[in-house]
Amino acid sequence: MTVTSIVWLRRDLRVDDNPALSAAADRGAVVAVYIYAPKEEQPWAAGAASRAWLHRSLTVFAQQLKDLGIELNIFHGDSVEVLKRVISETGADMVYYNRRYEPEGISRDRKVESALTAKGVQVRSFKSALIFEPHEIENRSGKPFRVFTPFYKHCLTRLTKTKAARLPPRLEPPAKKPSARLSVEALQLMPSHPWAESMLSYWSPGENGAARELETFLESELASYPRNRDIPGLRGVSRLSPHLHHGEVSPRAVVSAVREVEKSGSASERKGAEAFLRQIIWREFATHLLFHFPSLASRPFDKRFESFSWRIDARSYAAWTRGLTGYPLVDAGMRELWATGWMHNRVRMVVASFLTKHLLLHWRQGASWFWDTLVDADLANNTLGWQWTAGCGVDPAPYFRIFNPVAQGERFDPKGRYVRRWVPELSRMPDRFLHRPFEADPGVLAQAGVSLGKDYPQPLVEHKAARERALAAYDRARGG
Image (cartoon, rainbow, N blue to C red; front, side, top):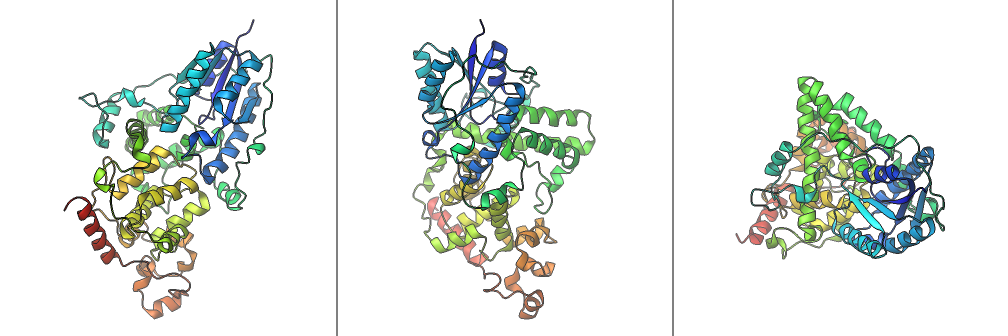
């Protein structure tokens, strides 16, 4: 008699290198279950952009499973109760899942495992979303790393090739199907705002989309990655972050593909592989920190910033979210985010620095906006990035490092390819004044068809004054 196993799917919507799915398939009949349970993920239930991506990703994944011979059984509700019911209806005696590492995910996994084990059901979990488990990487004192560079060097010494989990060409369906299954549409994940469809037009959610992005990156971008990764007007980067976040490709598969190129590629490709692997390990570092310090998502790691005098300024915050700060690089980034659900990493640092240091608005406000609008809104990475830029986290940027948005624009977008795309009202400005239109004389502005305060806003703040204000506030927080 064939045994039946449930594979409980969450942020692992792929068939290649999916350890839980492979283990279930090796054992016998497979019941694939996806449970949409946003209440269990509060206060970090998926934002609007992530939900829109999930809608497409689930649709693609359901078809992939159908092509392999089984169905994706979708539910909405309490994870424990849904799994208990599916176990009862299908006769499954084993549940497999891939582990989550954010605080709410860990709590839910423990609750599910305890409840099912009490019913006599075996539960087994796997590492899938990371290369290294958080407890596998420790410093010489047996404690978590708090600084990235030693973490990175330690990880490199342990970065060995491992065998990917594979599936047979066909999966065995269960003898009995669970009831009360839903369609993807019934989850109502897609926001009603037309923005969602427009935003997704820039992407191909799903495992095949991830594979194409990885192939394009390795063939066209890897060799120039160290040079181009900071240039927002070029593709330059992998664009894999949303696919990694939703589990449409495993980090192990990405690392394996990159190291294959590194092994046999040119000197430029080897340098590109080294630089890119550093970014993959930065992703691991973020999860490592959140796992060991679960309060990071809401509280600064540096306790001196608990009482920092963040300003409250709804008008400036609204201007920042809409890309109307008067600083072209900042505004281009915020408009790229709204249009595509993504923002170039160099520009993420600039817009975050502008919010927290030029405007002195709370880093949590920025993190919240990113959480709702980014298709790669990963809790660990989002938190680490914002606290790093604000200067209050683990391994932070120096508090006195305040990005000059004009200098950053002139350095990384000197010809204005990026700004002209996302801030088209400045497209006719000469290069010299593109990143500082407020310094152009009336004749230059008139020739470019720009009226400051009408076509494009005056700066919210003056850089030098804002920098001095921020440094004074940070000195007070640090007891200076």
